[in-house]
Length: 263
Image 1: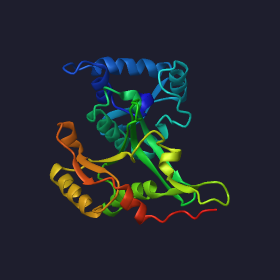
Image 2: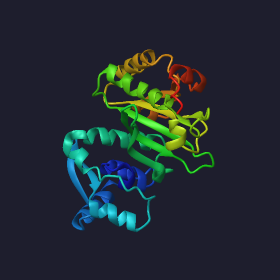
Image 3: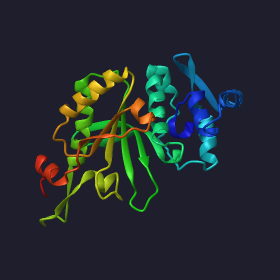
Image 4: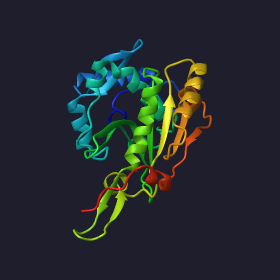
């Protein structure tokens, strides 16, 4: 689990490895202390009173050597993020993954996935990406707001996904008309027929405040041309439905973003 989500509490790990009607926290605590003695796991901070666990570099190497996960050469252990004070956000991301059914397909998740376009200077990290091993390479993108950013910044982060989806590349031999293709389809999600849906999860505040934030976000991204669904973490944990606030519209997106010049 820590190899996928990078950081988690005993409560979260027990939620994954024990039966749904059982409390396996004591078992997990003993297991984590043993891993710490072996130098494979450690704690570098807390979420409230609860220690946040992450793998050490040795633990990550042991996981890779055992072929337990797909090879992820740039994946970190999460220790730096916890030490820098981002532990509560990371724990909330893990709660989001578990609430979305992460227990069923945990190894198909990656966290802190960079999306960048060098030519435009656009670069941002997606909190979590779910890539299911289906014939169509089904991908879902997840952003979690833990109540720490301004409404304007949250809206900008969502609009960044449209900017990323709208960027196109010109391809063709020199002197020919050539054609253009979406950057994301050529260099990132090559098996996807449509740009992956973005899921925004709101957490970190009382529910009525999260509901207000949801409505404000819907207004701020009105007219966006990528698929955006939003929910609050409490609602997601209760299995309540998502709100659709953006629809994928590649034709309108292409009109909005200029074509790259041919060579």
